Length: 175
Figure (cartoon, rainbow, N blue to C red):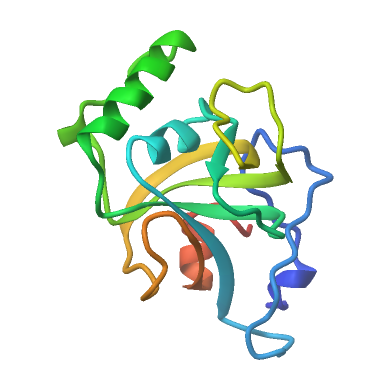
């Protein structure tokens, strides 16, 4: 039976505890649907790579978010040399191996899936620079999928992406 996603058992990654269920809303309120809206967090590279590969556990933002649960990690089209230098220094301090060079990083699409656990205003994490931090977990990379960002979302925002059932399966969001 092909039921609405909110009635299916879904998981973000194999590492996620089986008791965690994702609750997507059916876009049209139908019992059988083929489109799902999923939150997407837009992050500049190399931060997107660090998050998707499970190295960065918190993402600093100027404002908080009420979003909890699964999010797709979108690598923004733009990046700058200074961000790469800062991220490289932090990655070295955290003993992150294998960080790609700037020309090896994908931009302008989905690079990973993560779970938003909380939003905090204080943290001991080296990744936290404040004033707000989005606490992430269960992150994993996915095969790069180019995607247009929602107009006005910018490089440091969240937006919603409408996925087909096949795309949701491709990202491992539904089984």
